[in-house]
Image 1 (cartoon, one colour):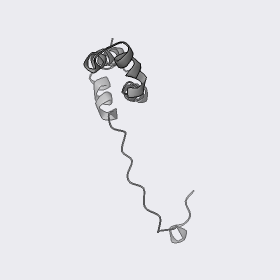
Image 2: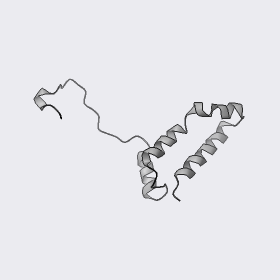
Image 3: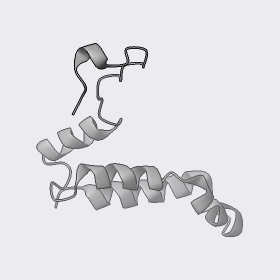
Image 4: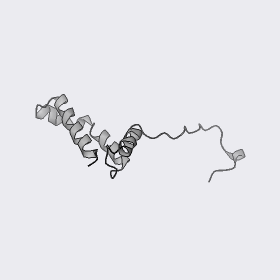
Length: 87
């Protein structure tokens, strides 16, 4: 519950309006058009997308297994986009 307007601390900066995290509208549109699986929550899709981009996770693949970064990106893209594609 907020205090009456005459008792609020007006020196505090106002919160900017809510904006959904980047990438959510694209995934929502993909779900609406049937390109993405509607059963997977959009927040899970977005989190998985960002987790796949963690460079430390894949360092051993590039260094230890002599896989090129381009080849790794290709495989990760296939995993992500085939994984969220509508069935």
